[in-house]
Length: 290
Image (cartoon, rainbow, N blue to C red):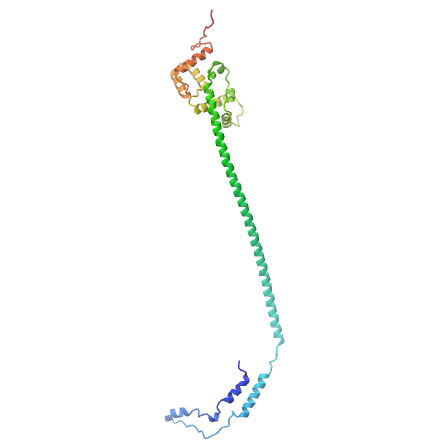
């Protein structure tokens, strides 16, 4: 910025007024027809641009510029207090933001720890599920092996019955009871059927219930092996034949029980009645010697 005390010096260096041409000379010449009066240059005026006046002006401006404006201390104190309050507010805001950042960082750390804990828990659950799946697969395999073994045991039991011809003798049939017959059969099948037919409202084990259970087991044995002949069904056929004397009944029963032809049934029936010492007409045979 240019100092004020140089302005008078600049004016001092300008051309003096007495040396300058008339300001209206060009206008008078240009509009001569209008009758303008020409400039009179023979009259001299006192110039204000003499050296003494310039020096005095410079001295006055210098003294004016050197004067110091009075300072208002109250305004300065107010400005300082205002700046101090703003600074304190900024510091407080910075502290609050710092605490917020610290809290957010702590929350992030906690969330990371929780996520890590959940990840570990999920991995543990996956291991448990995998172990449970493996255990179920092992149980399934054991179950299949057990079923296969029980099926083989059942088949062996049926074959042993097929080879046992004594079960058709009158002595066996006369001493036959459903409970004894069930006790000599495959216990897995027996317990399974007993569980299915169990009734909480009727817990009595009557002879009729034992017999029905034996009939079911006997039917399972017949379904397991095509050559199985049931002594129970054969005895029932004999009873029906003794009443109806019908060959058709025997053929139907033998077809169901796979016990053979009618002639085989007749042979067995004769042996059956001989054991009772009776004929097929329910007449006592006199076998005693004279």
